[in-house]
Amino acid sequence: MSKNTSIILSEHFQSFIEGQIAEGRYGSASEVVRAGLRLLESHEAKLAALKAAVKEGLESGKPEPFDVESFLAEVNAEYDAKS
Picture 1 (cartoon, rainbow, N blue to C red):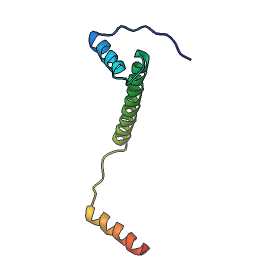
Picture 2: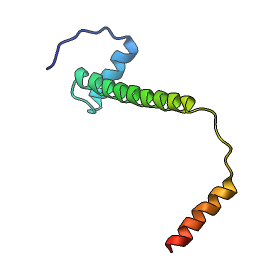
Picture 3: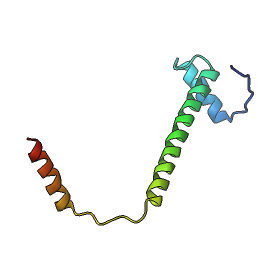
């Protein structure tokens, strides 16, 4: 359900919105604002996922030593066994 909300914009954002409408990219100020809000919502969701991944990494403990040569030998052996 839509709700009519009044906002105050700086001259910069008012000009930006008017430019978007004049260029035909959007049909109204509401469309421009909704597009901006969709981008903000997407950005916030990605940021939350990134923060969760960092938290998970920090909570997983100290990293263990990683031997690249041993790992590659294991991968190659598995590949050779499938061939």
